[in-house]
Amino acid sequence: MEAIDNKNLIVSGAHSLRVLDASKVFSMGVLQGGVYMLSFDLGIELDAVPGTVVPSDTAEDGLFHKLIAFRLGQVSQSRTELLQALSATQIIAIYVDEHGKNRVAGSLDWPMVLTYSIAGGLYECQLECRGLEPNPYLKE
Image (cartoon, rainbow, N blue to C red; front, side):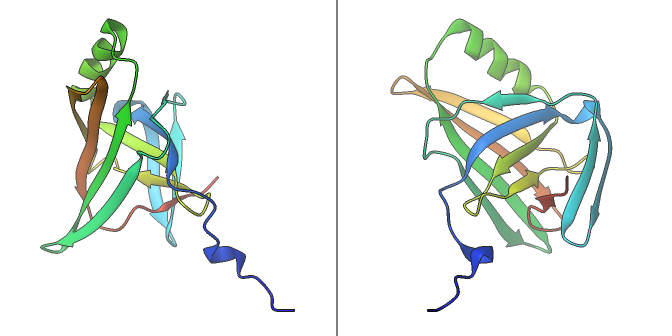
């Protein structure tokens, strides 16, 4: 019987998107492909529509263009107010990748910015930034 390589086992698509206000992250550093963070709070879990969290890293001009596209349901005044507040905030995002590993997008030097629109009864959202390396794994 052949052994299964669990390192590359795909368990699902990306999911479990959480955003942190970068001003509440006390310390952050990348070491050996992983990021260590010390934050004053746990951030906000965004309940994205299942299957819509799509992260990407694209190399451009010596930097990585980082994008996380996702959709949120339940258009409401309170959710719109939350998204407005987040769009005025510098963000660090944490998500679970397709291998079940926590990854971090954005940093204290290169925070993400949220943009959104309402279409078809859903919020169409994007978190975007540039960075020096692909989204590292969160070391816990």
